[in-house]
Image 1 (cartoon, rainbow, N blue to C red):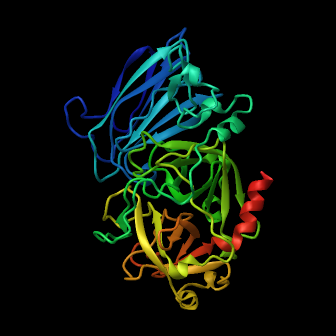
Image 2 (image 1 turned 60 degrees about the horizontal axis):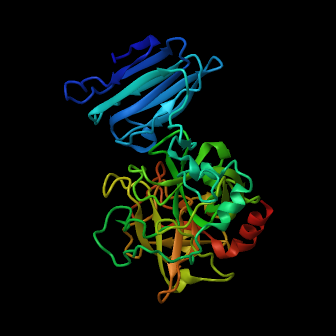
Image 3 (image 1 turned 90 degrees about the horizontal axis):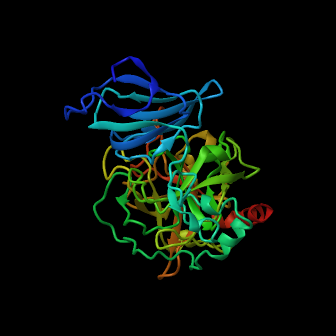
Length: 438
């Protein structure tokens, strides 16, 4: 690769593409941009890419250093996926268009070791062996597991096109009690971090990451909660201007950087509360119907919905969880938790901007950290606030709506900022009706 040079490998057969400095054992340079385009040699129609080594800077939305795969479809260049960090994508094959392209760029800050990618021209578009089934996420599983009524692909695609695939998968989902983690959560304060303390891995198994489908890693933009095998509850503002094809939901996630063994689903339908708007945040709730049910395991479990009128936020132990920004401190990319208490509603309203003045306490509540040190942050929106009392099952009390404190230019988050939450118990009828309707 050469800086600011767009290279074309005509009659591509087989070879390697490496980042600058990789063969010398050095990091790639900062402020670098280059592309490599592959034109397969006939009679080959397909280009296969094998990602043998990846070490790039890691940042949300891969906004620092990143590698992007594109291909030409009907004369148009289409972005396939973007990747950064040390995540190695599974092998990828083009759809038989004119060409495939790799785009690499770096920013002016940290640099990693780089990458090594093997390319191969082929007459076929198979990535799996003849006795394997190719999942949509490019995972390969034994072909005997296709349509066996058990979800084996991490994205559930082995049961998708089968007769009664969804209903058979639902029948085989493990029956587990809601709100009961298998991995014991840390409920006593430990080292205090900006934005909270790191949660014990998989101790809050209902927490999901909602991310942009374009990114294989670091595309997280909102949180959510599993409430049923095919349903996730989140905030309506998270889904504004998004369609189902734009979204991937990940389950059993602890680190946003290490996603090799997580379960994923695509969205089949998005349901936002019909009364939600930018000017009415009392109804900032949405449901995501998954394209396939998710199986319940030690790492993936549903949260209990509260009973109508339930008010555990007043007298239970409550936590908020999420992967929001941590202002450069703490374990980057790991799930955080903050113990929360209910704050005076009117005082919260008086401390914030006019856009929150129409909030009503019957639909929302205000919560914060008792010490005034920690709170939710960008990326935590849509995530859960859940409570338990005297060892009972954890119950979903709130869905993260908005952070309150601002400087006039920026929102202050992760520094004990109080936050508004949509009260789940007030919207049970809407949740249940919406799930029945689809």
